[in-house]
Length: 148
Ligand SMILES: [Zn+2]
Image (tube, rainbow, N blue to C red; front, side, top):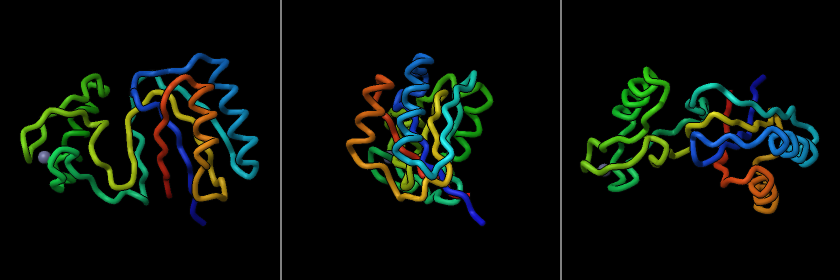
């Protein structure tokens, strides 16, 4: 048996929607994905939201070089300070960007708030559904497909 998740996180890692919005979004997602177990959670610090089995590497968003090995080290290093600073200089082309904005081949990201649907039994949410959730939560969302 394996498990799949669709996880929605704000594109801004520090953004935490207010509690009523969290609950409204959780209720809507549960209604949209009746087979899923849906939870909304807030962690005290920013966390790296990893797609696990779907992880397919990472490229530089500026020059598209493969920076997977460097990225794993950079994430480990940033985790030691609870991801307080995600700004990085890319090793390949010396550009300034954020660990959150790297070109993760299968999406990954950093957040405090997570809205997750476990075993939704669908591949994705439609655009309209994502827009409704974004409007409730007051922020653009990134989708991460986790497989374990
Ligand atoms: Zn680069």
